[in-house]
Length: 618
Image (cartoon, rainbow, N blue to C red; front, side, top):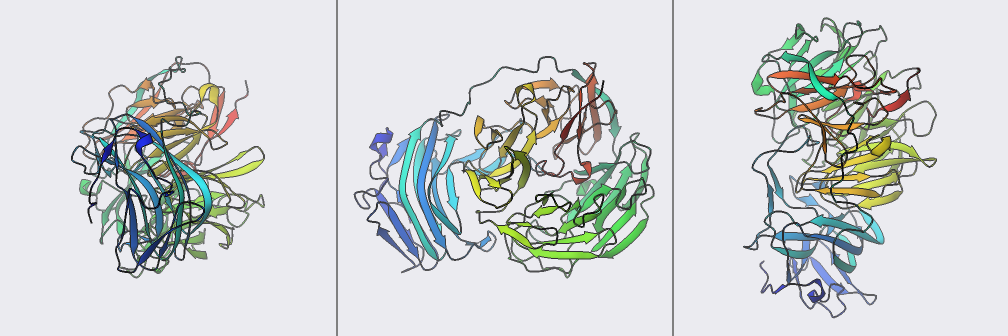
């Protein structure tokens, strides 16, 4: 239902009654079910909404005139007690409380975030897009039971923005309470956003160390490891195709292993560049799981879990993938179209307290995860609202890893230690120790960035800045300070730099500039990799790659690893035509190397392969 009138104001001071102190003046209420919701003025201020079924909406009638590039902070004091935590966009079963800003164009239509072409760094998604949908960077969205507290969002008005609209919206049985809304010009004073100088002026230039022409086996999904035990890296490409509706049913059609000279070591399946693109991780990992000195390939094909000999591709061990399970039916609904799962990703871990990682996790897209040992025996199963790539870390120090699965921290035996309720689902997570405390940071899509106590799940900090996509931990600050790089994606590209206390120290609006840390200089600092070069955390290009990858249909991807063996890392860039390895031209003798778990590489943040810095002996 359209509003009866929408007056336009030019100043924030003209936005009267955001706290409902004079009733519903300037507000317009709707419920999508007759008798479904009731709006009540609270004696302590604000509005309570009792929802019995369906959804409801409170829209502030006046529009604030704005200009592109203006910045605002939204502060909301709110709480909710929703009886369910459903989250399935495909069926429309969503339960939430949203207090948000909509940005409208000159025709008063919601602004879309659209670019003529992708000119940024790595997206933090497997793919790149130039249409990111409706702008959504000022949305404080809650789910479940949340206590009354002040929460903030801040944002920059996107291209095409002319008017600012304030909306409160909810869905699902329960009670929502919004006590106060405050809109301010500018962003919080302690957050820097002005352009910073380039501090890494002595970073060595890049040269092409090797360029490998790829055949029709090329794939967006690439894994790396020493397949023949000679100490050098080999590459495995995995092609895939969709075999069902949506983005939850895909399977591997071809696996191809090549060496550093581009020679095919082995191939399983039928290669076709039509199956190059991918929209998620695939169930492939390269790791020496039987400790014979050579890496095996752990993968799923044709509803089978297989451990392949890395040198020949022959099957060493095989078992059926798990039977499909309804679980919570999150995101795209139950993943039960096929009797068994095709697999989504594999994460190697140590659940049994052995002297090395000899177990692994296998999951479907959003609802279920299974743990296996090196004999392909199932250890446990968990159903919940899953992260894309489960984070594994020994939280309690007992020699066995815990698993953060997205909505819970699981002990090594699969039993939940704690749960969290955050809107949407988790895209990436990192864990680190700071001030004698283990902190878990999560990027939870439209649920925001959250910093949690890793042992208890208690929220330390929370930010609602758009579709929180990627978190990456590295020594990316000036002088090698350890900082966190966060990206938003759908609805608006932004890059935020957090310190280890979870405070935002730098903000870049309308762009992202890489998230994979690279030990390029060797002095203990790291730069951020993109297909075109290396950036500092402020979005400055520090090192440009010669003859960069351009013209790809699907876009290039990037990773980093010490291929040349001098402790510094090379940058690997690939697309459907060739794979390039960039290394340093000269530079000082490296003083540090980084230990990364390359076998847990993923498209989604560096939580499982974050580098631990080690000083080299002289």
